[in-house]
Image (cartoon, rainbow, N blue to C red):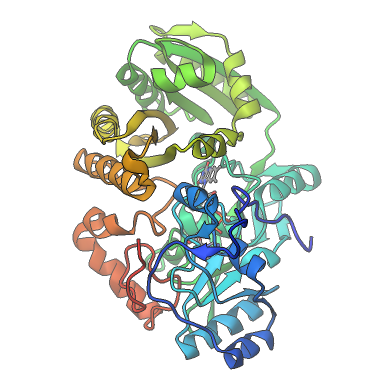
Length: 497
Ligand SMILES: Cc1cc2nc3c(=O)[nH]c(=O)nc-3n(C[C@H](O)[C@H](O)[C@H](O)COP(=O)(O)OP(=O)(O)OC[C@H]3O[C@@H](n4cnc5c(N)ncnc54)[C@H](O)[C@@H]3O)c2cc1C
C-alpha cells in the first residue's frame, strides 16, 4: 500500500502581498481553545500554522479563485487534523462531537461548489493520509481502496499491477480522491459505458458523527431494506466520513474506436444520442457540443459537434459503433481525429485562471434532465443566463447519457457590472438554476451542492426535503458534520453566502 497517492493541487496561488490571508465570508464562527486542540493532538497530527490553515480551507470553487487573487479564502479553519487511519478519524470526529465543534472533511479539495470550505471555522479533517489499495479481487472484479486515494495514482496502479480499471475518469482525475467522488456523486468522462460512481460502489466504511464505525453493502445485490451505501453516496460529508470503499472494476480495455459527427441543431444531436441509448448501445463517450463550444474547442463553425468513443471487448465496441453510425446517418461525418484532440486536451483547465485574472466571472453548471426535457432545458437555461446583466456568453455540451436522459453541462462568463463579482455570480447562478429547475431538470448531475447551491436544495427536493433533514438529525443530532452545506439546517448560524 502506498503511503501517499498524491496531494491537493491549489487552483491558483494565494495572493499574500497584503499580509495574512483573510476570510471572505462573515458567518457564525466557532473558535478552538488550546485544551481542545491538545485533545486532537493526542490522536493524530494537527496543523495550526497560517499557511496550512489557509490552503486547507479552500477548494476549486471558481468564485473562490477570484477571492484568492485578493488574498482571501471563503472561511478559515481553526485547526487541520491529519489522521492516517479510520480509527484516528473516528476518534477526532467523536471528540469534535463531544465538544460541539464543526468538522469539515477535505480531501483533494477539487470540489467546485465550496463543499470542503469550513464555513464556521472549527476543524478540517484532511483525509489524504488515508491512501492506497487494500485489495483487488480479480475473480469478482472488486477493488478495496482507502478513501483518500487520488485518481491518477489509482488508475495507473490498477492498470499496471492488476490489468483492471475503474473506468472512472473525471476531468479532475489528478486533483480528486475516491472519497470525494463518492461524497459528491461524481461522474467520469467515460460514464456512459462504466456508470457514475454510485453505480460502481459495492460497500463503504463510514465514521458516524458520534465516532461509531459502520460498514455498508458488500454483496453484488441485496434485498435487505434500503441501500445504505446510497445513503452516504452524495452526502457531501454531512452524514458521515467515508474512510474506505469497495468498487466494481473492469478488465482494462484492449480495443477502442472513435467517431465524430456534425449536426444542424443541438436538438438534432440530442435526439441522435437518445436513439443510440434507446437501442441499448452504451458508447463510453458521447459528447455533444453546441456551436459556441464546438467552435471554441475545435473550430467547427456552425456545426453542433458529437464526439464518440468506445472501449471494451472488440465485439461489443464494433456493435456499439455500428448502432452509433446508423443513428447518425443523416449527420455530417467529421474527422475522428477530433476525438483524439479531445483526449489530449480534456483535462487542461488553464483557461479558467487566465479568464479570472482578466476580471471575468466564469463557472460551469451541470444538471440532469429526461430526453423529453433536454432541448427546452438547454434553450431556457442558456437564455436565462444570457439575460443577466454582464453576461458575455452562455453555452453548453451534453456530457453523459442514459436510457432516460442526459447531463447538460453549461458554461458561462461575464463582466460583473460595477465590478461586483459576488453579485453577478449569484445572479447568473440564480437565473440558470431557476430556469433549469422550471424546465424539469435536477439541481446537479455530478458536482453536487456544497455551499454554492445550498439555497436551492429545499425547492429542488420539494416535500422529500423533510426526509433528508430527518436523516441528518438522526445521524448527526448536533449538526457538527460539514455544517452550512447541502441546504441542511445549520446550528452554527449564517454561512455568509
Ligand atoms: C478542473 C476540474 C474538473 C472537474 N471535473 C469533474 C468531473 O469530470 N466529474 C466530476 O464528477 N467532478 C468533477 N470535478 C469536481 C470535483 O473534482 C469532484 O467533486 C470530486 O469528486 C471531489 O473530490 P475531492 O477529493 O477533491 O473532494 P473535496 O473537494 O476535498 O471534497 C468535496 C466534498 O466531499 C466531502 N468529502 C471529501 N472526502 C470525503 C470523505 N472521504 N467522506 C465524506 N465526505 C468527503 C467534502 O466535505 C466536500 O463536501 C472537477 C473539478 C475541477 C476543479
